[in-house]
Image (cartoon, rainbow, N blue to C red):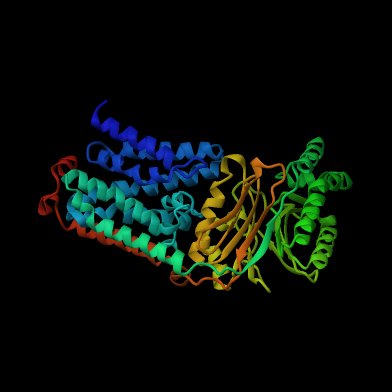
Length: 499
């Protein structure tokens, strides 16, 4: 195998391990771009695009999104955006002084990832930085730059490694090493000196037992009731439909009562696991209110509400206070492309409690940093996120959501049907987690820090770093176009490849 083929296949192999799946490798994320950047100096850029496309197809297949047309189009766009970073490295780096040239790839990569949710509105998927969700010291950088700062650092490591390799000079890593050490030191200091208070509130994320879930699923299957065929659900015999939905709803109410009596002050349901006809809606609220009054708990129920008005389904979260009142009824702001409902108005609700200000969102909402900023702007101390995932996607959503905690400085309780439920503090520590697929009855109980929201730089300045990357991409392009490779003494390998 020639050197070029070895580099390409190495890049593909590392990229397959990098794409954020249930089995992704955080280390591979730091390495995959190195062989591909070296490859660009020897072969065509279209082959690099092919490598990125392979990685994206693997990700789509691993998450069961390969045959979802909207996902295919969105991630084809993301692949092209990420490819621009390799194009820029190939065309611009030979025309810039060595150190300045190392900034091209990370700057364009971070800018491209920022543009994806802005232009395509498919959430912040594909952000390379999200692979580092478990690296707590590094994760703290998101409190200043958002996830894009971590993407920049990973990309800069790759371009610096290529520079050091081509010049056969390991000292080229000195500046990068100082910056990386400073980031880790600052992150470690934030974790140690600004740790959450020891005061806490007991929270619970509940789900029905597997037996109740199976009884409800069997009854719905007999009637051929499908979640996404809302018109058919509404048209079916309402008594039989209510009876088919009842095992899950009844069990969730019983689990809520159990956890609240055990001391949970806040109880959360998963997204759309409970299904309710409009005619039974008032009864559900009344039954929940009884539990809230009996136990003094705040109960955030979540459910699919089937209505007589097209599109006949709403994805709803309702907060019931200890006095039995409805504090909010919130419709999901960002339904996935597979969900057949009308988006809500896009306003995150809040309620003031003895345990701080609580805000609510639903699942996919948390993939949109701008929407989640509302919770910070409204002074939320705790964000409740009902969610519903699937086996191939069971960990990804929960891991990505951690970035919202660090970016905006609030704790989060996330309750996922068919996925990973988590309780996370404002610095990204996962205090408790449960996996729906590994237990007969998923219940998460945790003590979340009881304190005002931690103000962050990112919540104040927003995506300034990402905009700086956009501006930096233009500035580096302009600087490169004013110079020639020979003017800066570009390495022979790179200058020859540009011919």
